[in-house]
Image (cartoon, rainbow, N blue to C red; front, side, top):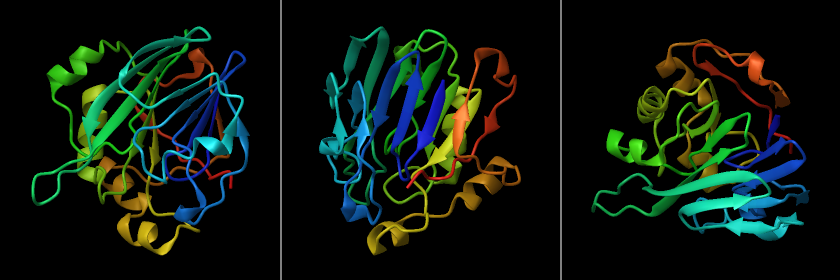
Length: 218
C-alpha cells in the first residue's frame, strides 16, 4: 500500500489496484491540485477545501454521506461527527471515513473538531487502525491537544498529520491554521524527516504509534 499527500486533507490511498482520493480541494485554498484518477472519492464535508470532486476522474462512487459501503472489495464506514464548536454552540457536520482494505485499516478524520466519546468510537467497530490521517492545525478542526487525545483513543499504528499551515496556502487558510510543529511538541516527539510517499507492508507496521510527515505532492 502507498499513501500520497497533496496538502491540506487531500490524500491518495492505493492498495491492490484500488485508488481512493480523500477530500480533493479547489484553487481557492491557494494550492493547485493535479488532475487525479481514482476508483473512489470521499468528501468529509461540502466546502471548497474538501469537495472538488471534478478534479478527480474515473471514480466509480463519490461518498459524501455517513453509512456503510462496499466498493471494489473495499469496505468503507462513514460516521457523522462535528467540526469545532463555535462560541454560539454551532458546529458544522463532518464525516470521518474508515477503509477496510483487507490487509490494512485506514482512517481519514476530515475536519474533525470535537473529540468523539468512547461510545461513539465503539459504534464504529473498528478493531485495529493501521494508519490515521489527523487534522492538527486548529481553527475549525482539532488543535494539537485534541488531536493527541483522539490518537490516544484510536491507538493507530501510524499517524499522518494533515490540515495544518503549509507553504502556498491562501491568506485565510494560512492565517487560520497552526504549523505542524505545535502538534509534534504536544505529542512529545522531535520532527521526523518528511518523505514523499508512505509505502507500507503489514509486517513493517510499528508496534507503538509513530508519526509520519509527508511532503505535499503539489
